[in-house]
Image 1: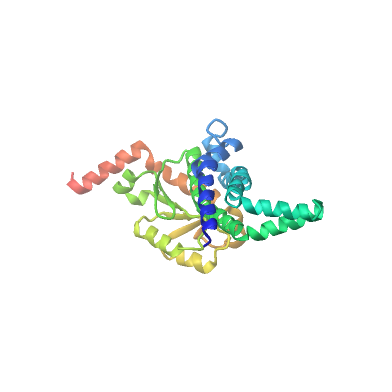
Image 2 (image 1 turned 60 degrees about the vertical axis):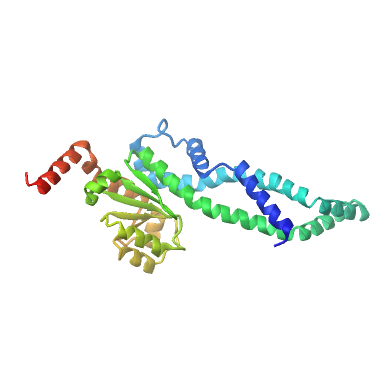
Length: 287
């Protein structure tokens, strides 16, 4: 790669770090902008509207991100390029002047400049695309966590290599009796490494495992392979109704938040936990 191009991409990365907030900040700002807060929404409202709220915040988080990306790349990143390749601006300006300084001359000068900067701009767009892919997955995980918190669901989150696992209610309960726990793993798309993900989830030996995704291009074959590992897929309600209406191993987010998780909450109450602990001690110590 041309040294100028390499230097430019390094500068783009620095611009990104300085000008674009982290995923956690972008998602938090989006929730606040939409009024998805404890002050504006009750846990019951969130549970009833979980699918709609998740779909909205999934879409609007990108709007928030673009509000930071647009000036970061169009102004600050391009300014870095003009510092590296200032002579190209001089050449383009001279050409425009030699052609009379009119509109046609300006157009030809810009065409030459874009051709000269082609490899720089191509690497810029590739860098933006790659950054978005990485952020998109993390953003979805955070959106799901935020909504779980607003819905009043008790959970602990654990960061793994390519996803977040959300354990309800917590790891202490899981160690005591995993049959009364749920694992919800967040993966924005299942296009890559999906089999490794479901194999890892299967190894956790929890009977209630759900893989949440925004992916709408999942095949029935892939659904079957996931179900074979005793894992249910969670998708947006529209995808469930359109593609998997008759598939019991695929549920919508409304069903997850409105029916699946609430039916287990009674096992997570303090009295239920104490009762389960007493039963466990009686089995172990024969008392």
